Length: 258
Image (cartoon, one colour):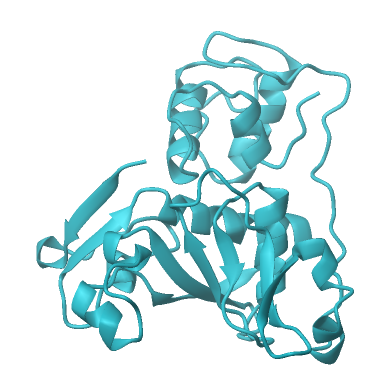
């Protein structure tokens, strides 16, 4: 996707319901460069923590977003890394209890949702995660730890839970839950003009999420109000905004298309 240049002097805009533009700034600088994939990816991880693990994110923390080359060197970078091009972000989340959510849960969500270019930061039991959207062609799906000789190694997420490091840090394998399956109906694709039981399922989902589906409510008729609500939902989730409820839109809502 594209990279957008923002100027905080023109306003601290809300990039999504979870993030403000200022959270991604270099300290003391008002120009921010940010890849358009970054915020939708963070939102997907937040949604995934809830849908897969029942973890409600209460507070979001962006440790590092865009960095000017000078600031990148100041904090130990090369001055030409992915943060300087707006294509990387370091972050962690706190739960509803204000405690940091361990990074392994975010990494598992990334694996389940096929999010690419993601890793745990450093070798510890803390919560910080790094995303680099340069790596769209490869899944890292890794957890950084040290081997017996003290060197950094990368473990796959499933292997991490059997490692001595996980046992020492007292991190147990999370129990995942499958998204609800819709049985007996074809949910591959619906759009404006469609009618029937599957439209009612989609309308009920939108209504439950607080989207306005019009005065007729859940009537099984994919009309203008449902189309508008679908487009707003797609925009909020960083999906292609076309009004077509297909496989990706259903999947983002937690459904399995049969």
